[in-house]
Image (cartoon, rainbow, N blue to C red; front, side, top):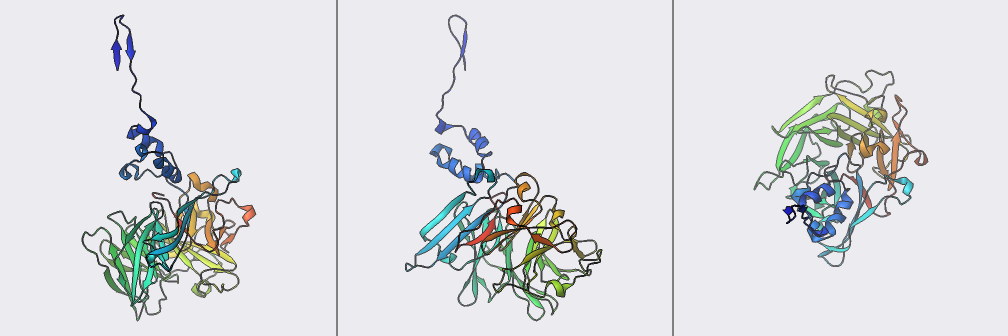
Length: 411
């Protein structure tokens, strides 16, 4: 404010505010430039810096590399408390510092309210949330969401079913558009789909749908959400379906060509899918990708872990209704993007932090991170890189803990 004294000279008074009482708009400008871990510390500095959640939602920068979540929950003699170990590790983007990736303890020790976490399995991860499932007695399953970033749990109604094969969700469970999708094993030419809409007001029940499938189709191996539909892969190239959320329509996508229709190198379903090797369906900028893990030495005695791995990459040609090699089966065709697969799987677009992991498939095996990169146009898939030859930003997980990929909120 300007003031004029008796001599006609103007002076400006300055409002002095303590650091603990900065305007909210200034605090938002600062927190926008911080990584997630630093935002947590920022809000803990003083009471005046604890911005309301609605002011910082949507401020998370993208694209961001996924973190890893390590966890273990065990029963104790106290039925009300569970032994809990849960921590987050961010990728090491500054290897020259020699400090390694930063680890953040979410919780450790005896914790109340975690009894449902014991023996729970991770199904899918999106926007900082993980969908877990747990088998209960008398033919029912418990599904729930957990966000280690904010330590929040969202429970879903119990699902009456003897078994299920895959489960995923469309968006963060805090969104009214969140839809949870669970597929059950095919039986006698029928498949049952269970769908739960988080934003359906007082509706607290699962919607059950039954559809026809060919008798010879195998179990559903993987599922991906893209553009309002869940796409389901049944373990052979021709077995692909979609479920549209808006109209509840189930459609069998007639895949009629082999993945090598432009190549001389012959491969068929029997070659790729003869063993219980995992395959992963992912959405990549509007493109549907299939990553298939193969083994040169049959398969590992531990289900889900391959002794000698390589990955084949295919993308779906919608016009020809055919899988084809993604740039010759090579991850070099990802345009700088990266794929992360495991119990939770997704892709990260190119640019920003992703340069250090570009054009690679990332996978944890026996707690050890593995990186796969192939020679461009090689028909033999993406082969594992030697650790000393690739840029490392992920490190072995803590022994005895399960590890999954998790994207930071908004990432």
